[in-house]
Length: 111
Image (cartoon, rainbow, N blue to C red; front, side, top):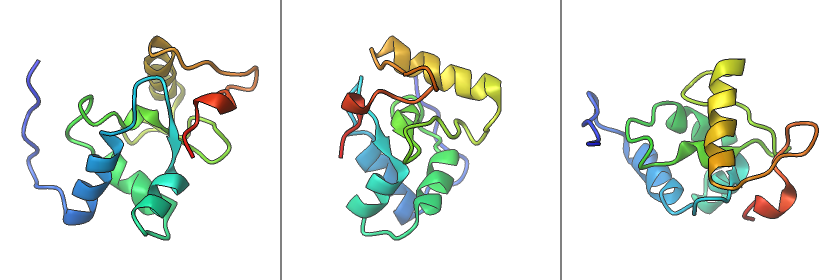
């Protein structure tokens, strides 16, 4: 499968986000806040907006980013059940487990 080139080039900030997200190993997750801290950014929302526009999925595995409460907050710019189910299925296929409240088990979280 080839990755299509984006129609609009990512900003420098988005490129930095994508480069860091590429380093998240399969079977592990990070939070939006952790990514923001690693990049010296004060905004988890800015990270979410960059990932929402991720034209390089699945090579840039944005499904490995979760909310600070370990909940799946969105995927592919959507917060609906079908989109979140897809994100959960991707993580489950990598071995990530969830508790009864739908939170990622803590030992899968980096940082």
